[in-house]
Length: 290
Image (cartoon, rainbow, N blue to C red):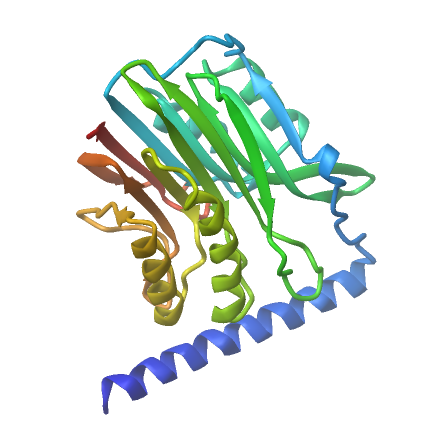
């Protein structure tokens, strides 16, 4: 059997699983009469939490540690412990599926030294309560700029967008700024729609002339999506951070989570096995500015 045939069969099985998932989701929504998520107005997307509110805090070291994790809305019982243990010692945290219910707000506000900048993808109902979910950047430095990009594409059935948050930081040792982005990419969509979302973000990043970090859950569950991602990163002059052993979360054998960098030397990297804290593994990288 040719490799092309095997890849087609693998992709076919993946698409069948997606169709089954969407069908089950529709059935659950109908059976439970669950309220559909709502999309916030632009003015209500961004929020800031945490302890670090020093407007003069810059990145002063030429070596930084970056942590990226899809935190599964904090649904796992051991999420808080795993988050605090595994994120400790990092300079920048890049989080997906942040969920601002009282429990997660308490962790962000009281249990870490970081400032958190959050961008809501949508407002999710939990019984009679409604909480924003989205992406967040935690940092010891204070960003000079914060922006967000809501995907023009939507997930099927519930018609929700996905979100990217971007931050710029001053560097004590350079006149250039560091730009950081974390993304939760569209999932149950075609390769073309994922490419459209990635291109929207890349167009913004392409205007930045300094060092870049772009990390998150890219939902690259097919080889075609991985190829598109690598092509877009190459245009930006960014390169992937490799992991050995590579135990990243996968679907159909393809990794979902990535860290890409430009203007850095990668000193070390690791995948943090955190099955009790999320349905994704966490990523860590130590980087030195060039």
